[in-house]
Length: 599
Image (cartoon, rainbow, N blue to C red; front, side, top):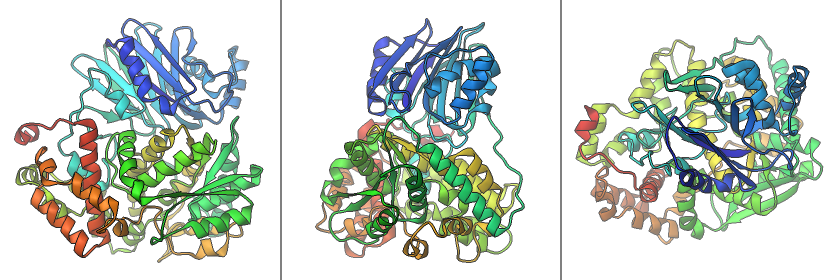
């Protein structure tokens, strides 16, 4: 696991490259490598997980130069195949097979990879070419800035690092505030910075001076499967067991994250089958708060004999942690789980672990959200779309527009809200309802909102997260299953619950679903430090600097949360607080004239 960065067909000094490397060192503290040509440069920060004595990057073979972030789980099979074709390798590290694989298959090399990855290849054979590639789920993000006029491209694994290239400016994407509040973070390839995008999942980008930037997205669609409930449950359990066992192999200690819910508990149970004295980690908050899950996590740990670590953080420390959380993410994410994620992986690192397996992505694959259940239960036609889109929001449209300044409200209503664009995509989808929803949940929301959060906030503490539910074989099978095996009536994740039968305590299997997040409604109350911090950050003088929010409307929101607190007003306050922290962190410049942006 590493962090990568570079530029192509442009000029960047070694000082710039070293600055980029320094800003990503937390994600790769074990070694740093930089190599440059006349108009290109590649770099890597290494977190040593496999073949600790090998793994020196870049990997080079006859004019092919490669840097790599991630894990290739089928590298042994690929090494045997490539060795039979005459290739030799300097070590047993998974990434060392990449130049030979590229030499054999060109840009189709990704079709042979099983794992999580972001890869950068400079091909100097003939006309120089840069190739960037991402895994099918987008587990390893890669951000880039493309200057079409000059044919210059810059890229990095993290936004703060990319912004340290002199040619990359921190300009706010003007619709960004609305997009963020509508979906908790910008979806798909968009970021909160104008001119900075993120490669989509399953993407291969090619850059040459002659052709410019071309991005191809691999087809990851699957045909429907014809399976009954028992057969499907057995197959899901078999696939998940195989992936968990495979992903617990490393040359460093591996632990499990156990929230107490179905998904992480199931991964913990299967990991305990293979890892002797497995360590498990759960996070909770000092004091008495709603929705405490530590009891469920302890039950799972006791049943499977893990050495359990109960991590506790003090809500009084949240304001001190939030700045770090926002900086590592590089852009706002309105889910309070971000703070929990950051604190949890900091504790994992302090306990001496470099690798953790988690249950992330099961809800997206198997229909675990109430919004999916409600959409599938709704009547015919597209009447389900507005409620589904609304359920994704941090702040619903009506309240959001009321918080905006007159100028920004005019801009957004003329430009079209984020809900408008998402609803249009859903209503025009040629797929059945579940498939259309799945395309949003897996293709747009999961990488942007979920996987980038997990990646950035675990690697902030030099911890590699491995995601069994995101592995290709399990993803393909889950996507092939009919809706009735996932959601039936009020039951969500039907086939996954069936697969977990006999592996987990009844209390975990029968408990109501609740989110793994902060109880912010209780924490954003008078007398709590978090509420005082929010008032300071959302003071009228601060809000007037950027002109997007109406200071009076925000003060009214704070009063509402103080006098009659609700989950909705608490999330609105939290979301605005995070956005203001982001503006402070990055000093993102805003356009002087929004009407010019619209035009």
